[in-house]
Image (cartoon, rainbow, N blue to C red; front, side):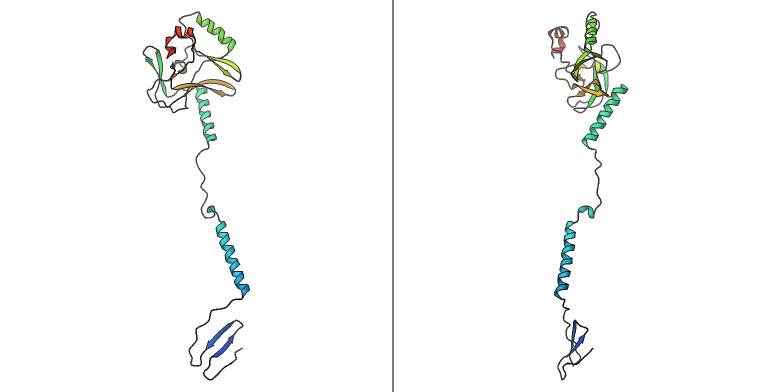
Length: 233
């Protein structure tokens, strides 16, 4: 519906629809159009929508925009499990990599590293017959009757029980040939496999290739030192 309201040089106002007003001068020039007006309800709805969108943007996580990158590094527990499994395999297979036997001045045979070992790393098993204390004492007494027989017996406690590894018999295993030193680069440690204790040697410090492997026998008895003076060092 269109209705002229004013004439004679004045502006003519045309009502277009319900909310839009357009003014035209009689000389044919169009006046600047005024911006549309919104009701208070429309403004509040638009503002609420914008606020909600901004809030949603703030609540988004980085993972909403970028894929999650999983770490490929193994946990300490997994690494420890793998290390223990590797030691089990070396012990059960009798494999003794990274060392060789050489003659040493004043001590006879000795074992030398052909690779580097880091502190705490497994080196070799002190392999022999695992005995209870009663049988071990009987063997030790028998060995004492023959001066030509060396004694390679190592006593230790495991789960409140005394055991002994008797490595006296020649076996080709290298752990029994590692010499003594109070300031050695190896130390003894127990390693159980299916409930059976194994006496092993681990590096007590970083060991370089070419170094002699040594550990403290721990025997401080006067009789032992008298028979083997090198135990003092």
